Image 1 (cartoon, rainbow, N blue to C red):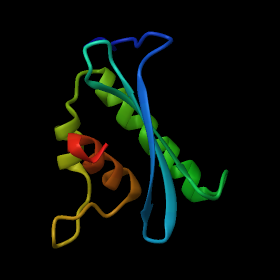
Image 2 (image 1 turned 90 degrees about the vertical axis):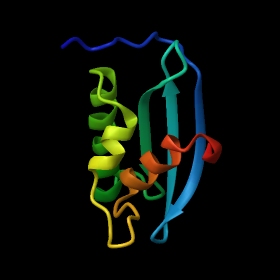
Image 3 (image 1 turned 60 degrees about the horizontal axis):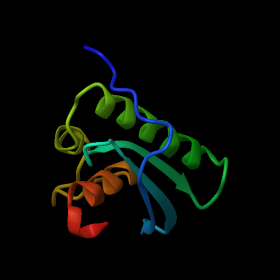
Length: 103
């Protein structure tokens, strides 16, 4: 399997949302064909352990996307509560971007 390299300049969208009292900044970068190619996440407390973990999770999700794993597969694989709601900030972000009308 080969990694799809993204162009240096690409369209992106940034938004903020709250998750369990944490302000999360989400930036989505798009491939030339319009599909999601990368995700960046940051917590409101820069360089905190939560910020680092969210950033690392976004990097791993981005690499998976660039190696051909679909956004829906990644979102389906994350931990959820008994109501089907994503348990983590990365899960909440994936749900937001896998539902186009949210962005």
